Length: 110
Image 1 (cartoon, one colour):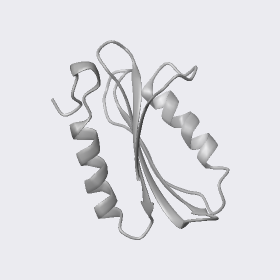
Image 2 (cartoon, rainbow, N blue to C red):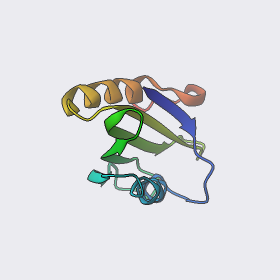
Image 3 (cartoon, rainbow, N blue to C red):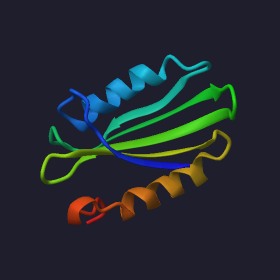
Image 4 (cartoon, rainbow, N blue to C red):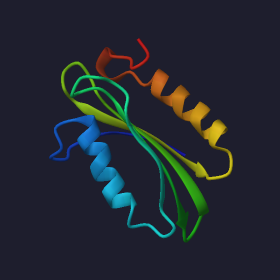
């Protein structure tokens, strides 16, 4: 599953938003953080969170969550949620989703 949404939380940077997402996700059963990484050197640079957890309805899940700010300051999240088994395939799908998401004429891959 792919989810794309605008962020409206009180956090002022993608990394702060990813930290808050990690705090919330850590309450899930069998939560395990794989990575929480800054992908840029400036405050509004992208951040990525990757983790696994046990879903009651869907089994063991892997989530890849990229948070970034468009040039106008609006922050977005692009998530891929799937089975925890094949991380490489999930990363490929996630990267394709990130590369092709273009809010208001701004593409993350450009």
